[in-house]
Length: 418
Image (cartoon, rainbow, N blue to C red; front, side, top):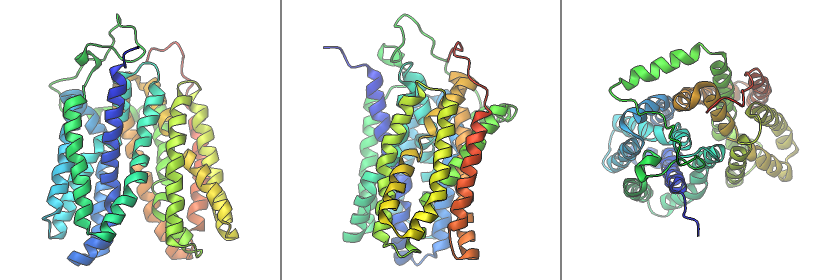
């Protein structure tokens, strides 16, 4: 029987760690009401703390990539998970708003940054030659999987016990994850005497570990380098639109949009969960496709189809048809973050294996800016027009624009070594 390549063990450990970090980061929404009730804090203050966390996890990505190159992948995973664990433990004793901002804004934001931005790229680049796109797609889907599987459980704990019981659950998961990372995670294939999956055992072409360099300087220099390249602007611009049309708009306002048409809250939340199920399928398949087809054309179709679906949503809601809403949820869910594997692939093709993780980190930062713009502007548009319709129509239009951005990227030379 053929021995299991250790790259698949690394993939499994990384997948689980991203799930845990993802549920910690995404669980904030279920604690708004409990924190408001127990501590008497205003919703704007609580929301501000969570917004700080979203901002920091997005913008910490390129710096995390630099830290990984300097301190090593395993150490940074341990450090990041430890920050999450300590932050969760401090939640039990917090009693003021500034502590909430420090814990859920700064600590959990920075702690989740590695796992939710550049980790999938780092692992795929280091541990896979063949199936690299599939690995990125599988790891990218982990965040949605965590939200889908555990958020209802945490909500049940809050409802039936207390918010502290829910925190205790994810705290226990973070402790378990620390142990798993410590035992099974390795930084490089050579650490276990092997080569990346799909690479000849006699060929060693792993990028060297950078040492004795200022990680902040490395990250900023990478940004400056990227800003000089047309493809960076096109990828960052398209990913800005990706964030605007997913977590920023759908993730923040979809449920409220449904409720405004008289759809029950639980039903609207269930539709969002359905998107999560099909996101897992769509993103994994997208990774498989990105190994086989021109990544530019994959992104073209993803953004085009997403734009059409967003333009269709106001019609489906106006019709009051649950059938059309289910169809939208399935269709949109398949495309939710299917853009990630081909975006990572194009970054790798343009900037090379060693630089691609950090460049993708900055591209992800653009994604988070887009998400923030949509989250805020969606509320403003609703206040002005007493409807979300124009927010979703604008997002659909931007997606159509994004489909054109990616076609302007220069076609990759298949002879280029990546």
